[in-house]
Image (cartoon, rainbow, N blue to C red):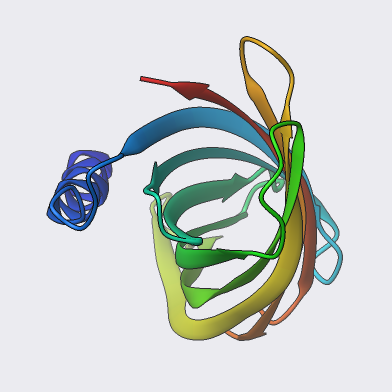
Length: 161
C-alpha cells in the first residue's frame, strides 16, 4: 500500500513537469493535530512548484491512535499563493482527502477481526511558506468537509530536491 501511494504521488508530480519552464520539487515531513479526533499525526509530503501562482501538493498523514483504532489520510491539494515574496508567502488550500479509520476487535477464539471505513472529503484552508535558508517551514490550518471532517493544524519541514 505504501509503495502504491508513493508511486501515485511521484507520477502525479512528474505529470506537471511539462507545465512550466521553472519547476521546483520539495519533499518533507512534519506533524500536526486533528481537533475532532483529538490525535497527533505524523506526515510526509511532496510539493511541485512552477512559475504559476499554484503549487500541487500531496501528503500522507498517519494518526498516532491507541489500539484497537488506527487512522490515516491521503490529501491531494492545490496551494494558491496570495503573495510572491522571497521570505514568506501565504496561500489558500483546496483539494481532496481520502481517509480510512480501522478498528480491530478481538474474537472469542483468539483471532481478531477488523472493520474499516473509508471516505472522501474536500479540503479548504490556508498556510504559509516560510523560507528558513536550508529548508522551508510550512504551517497550515485545513478543514476537511466529509471524510474525517475536522480542523487540522500542522506544519511541514520541506527540502528542495
